Length: 100
Image (cartoon, rainbow, N blue to C red; front, side, top):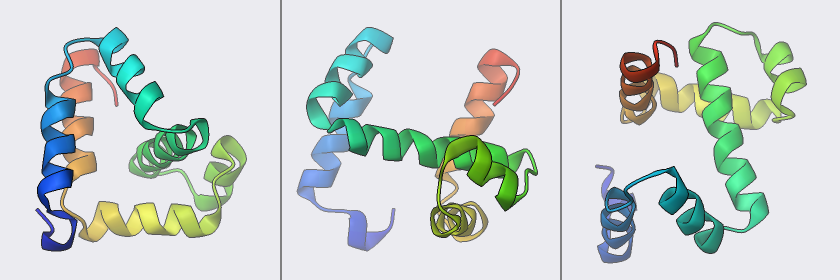
C-alpha cells in the first residue's frame, strides 16, 4: 500500500468497505459516504480504466464517459504504474461475470 495513503482513518474506511455484504448495503453505504458528484467521479474513473483496458482511444473515452483527457491520462498512469488495484478488480469481475 502506498505509504502516503495509509493512515488510521483510511484503513478504517477499507475495513468498513470489506464488511459490506451485498449490493444493497454497498449502495446505501456509498450514498451516505459520498456526495453524488464524488460517486459519479469514482464510477467514471472505473469506467475509464475499463475502457483503457479494452484498448479504446482517448477521444472515444471522452465521448463515452465525459471524462477529461487529464482524468483519462491519470487513470492510464495508474493502470501502467500504480498498485494494480484496477487489474485485481477487473480479474475478479471477469472471473465472476465473464467480462470486465
